[in-house]
Length: 629
Image 1 (cartoon, rainbow, N blue to C red):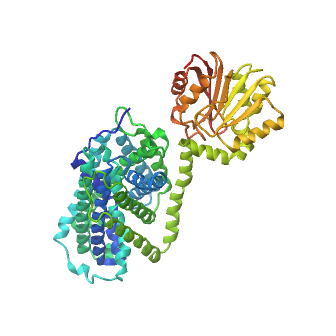
Image 2 (cartoon, rainbow, N blue to C red):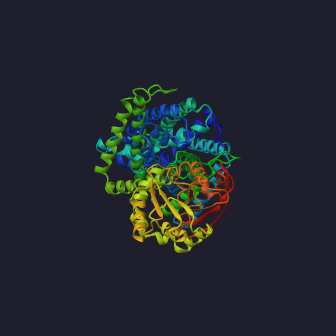
Image 3 (cartoon, rainbow, N blue to C red):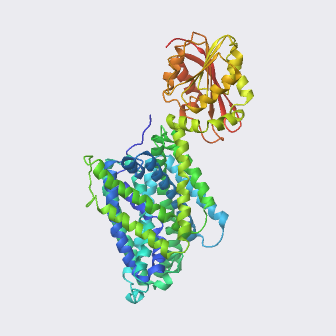
């Protein structure tokens, strides 16, 4: 089975980290900061830089313990467990896609400031497809692309900083405090996105050479480098252009380029800034599928997305999923940069707070785990930073109009993950499936003509052949939908053993059987899953509907059925796949060859064919016992 390859060196991951964290923040937010606190926004940038460096140290310790593709999801999994780690993983995925939309909007705002919506969307989708294709082609190709963008980004900023150092006029920054002191803290909230992106870098830890030792250095050095660049950029920007004018700019770096190098310089920097922002899109496009991969590997996303390409060693199915998702979100969310920013920041702060607290928990929970880097004050410092983040949220809610509405919208995106988690647990966890099936037993009874219509019942019973007077095992009788039909077919001289590991559903089946007066039907309720009840004797045929999807040990169940049958006795299994033409069933049930292989391994010769149903695909598996196992 293919695995991710360790191909990234320290220099490569350092530059990728810088590219991932830089984002659009430094291109837009100095002007936003000046709008909220004038020249004093420099203090906001300084304080934020110190906090960002400490946060990077926390990420460094966590990545030294768990240099895995899941990144922040892996950290939370180790600290909190399954459900909370899914929520944090889901939140990160949502925040990342909002980031992509924000980056794209920000980039196109620089390149094409006039209204050409369809052209802009077309350009954005073109880059998304190109970046995803390069991500598919392998990490070495992706790394070359990301490193190139990192050089463009840092080079663009340095080209504006150097001449700015010689043209600073202190008069542009006096008076220094033109707003209340609290504005400094409000500004930190709105410029915080500049340093978002540590999680993106951690997704690549598994593909970094000696990742446990290299990732911490890359995260810390990269954040320090960004802090220095940001501070110099803000100081020189406010030093050469009066803050009143600078704060109104929607394309501040273009204005700086025009100030330093004339109109031609402005045009050149417009293109360079666009490429720099698009480079940040590339960073997320390359890294996000690693998060999907990690979730899928742990059974918190569809297992199909856990596969890795045999040639390119990339999570190719996760990349395809990411391409579709980001394309849809870009089209739907094509709007204001600041609206997207206001939606992203609170969500990201909550996510980072969860990650920082995971470090504290792991200090107590796994004190002996190898750490190649330990952040100073690791049991107290992260808690103080979390309190600071929460205070920023409170200040933002108090000071900003519409903040509560934006926060509720952000939580609604997170809330979508709750039913998704339940569906995934039903998909993989037999216990959850049993509980949910029991809970909806009455609904199953009312809708049995939809999920198991008469035509399907007739077909699968016909596949058993003549069963009159014979003994038939029905493995998984649910509410007795098929049980009554089998009772009619075998007649009073036959026997039907209707087996179920549910509780409420077979009670409904038992009442229906008793109402019909079928004394030759035995409904057996067994609270032990993945087995055929020991009381069931040898049978002449076996039939099952919808059970394979949640049997944990399929081979064991099939083997126990085999041992109760004679050679050439028939079996029929019906399964469901591609629910609503989108959601697949268990991975192996999506492959006919794999189905045949599993049944053959348990002594059965079977054929498989599929037919489209109401909102799913029926899988008919039918054949006979070929040999004893």
